[in-house]
Length: 158
Length: 266
Picture 1 (spheres, rainbow over the protein chains, first blue to last red):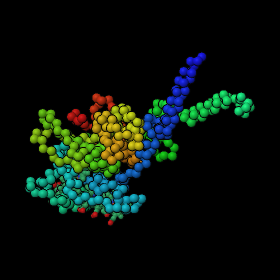
Picture 2: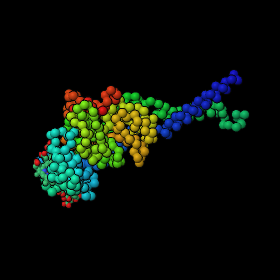
Picture 3: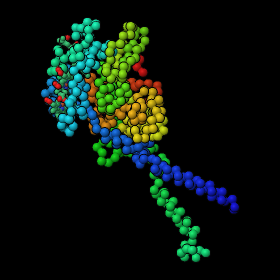
Picture 4: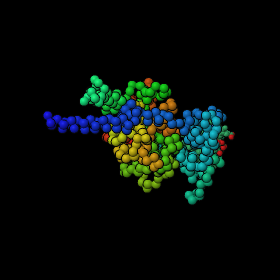
């Protein structure tokens, strides 16, 4: 029986290794890991918690009902206010105005959607910029090229 | 000898054996969760219900996405909205828009200047363009994800409601997933140095809102639906009309579907 100590040594080493594994896992693996799958369950709830930047549709109407009502009647009824201006979070917090809402008066804003492109669906109203503005091929674009004729009310409700 | 050094009745051998048994018992109680190497949840894909006390239950939804290529005007409003909503670093994209222009001979020009963040300008190809369209792209939130499978640390995962997400705290930035995604939907964030991607605006969905890209699309080209909601319009469209997915040959089973998608689109 003098060889039995080999078995004991092996058993002790194995037990020590298994203990190290189990104890190591306990401290290395976050508690919520495996709650819903092979990932940290808390991560999902952390994603849920971050605050939205854009408001819900119609959030602007609470304070700008005149513009919202006009917009609902015109060609831009499907265009959210935040597309042309900016996200609600920079402007309003807890029902109070906290910052200025950007107002983009550049022709580029309109060109995003209305400049003629071959790939655009034909039903979309499109313009050839230079033709519409009556500019020669070399003339520079005035920065606020569209606002002279399409004024504020016309833009909100074309 | 025993009688001299120890309390009568308890031999050294007995004491050590009892102590060892006690310690083993304690260890089993303490580390039982760790001993069950594969928990029941990992196998079954999650619990039947979400956590108590949260308004949103991820197990009760199944998000699906539908892009109508025929409606997309290529304005890039979605790209700008996504950038603002999710604080996407400049020159990186969680969603972007590609333009396809096909000539009579079948030659195809594909471009997406700065992800279409600033829209498109006319592209002079010198050929007769007979077909042209825009293809908005985003993470396809595949059912059979190539990206999640190979994450070595369990940072990439598919949520119970079908959204592919990255746990920033666990991600080690090895970028295996970035290379594995056949749609180019992932990137390494230049500041956090972790994988970053479309979250389907999970924070908005959880509050009953829609995604920033869907909300800011002026033509309804992008829509999101819940396949577990009764009578969901988007789910109905996907089920009953002709829709395609990108790269179907890869069998990734995207949950992002495309209507009126030209065969040239990749």
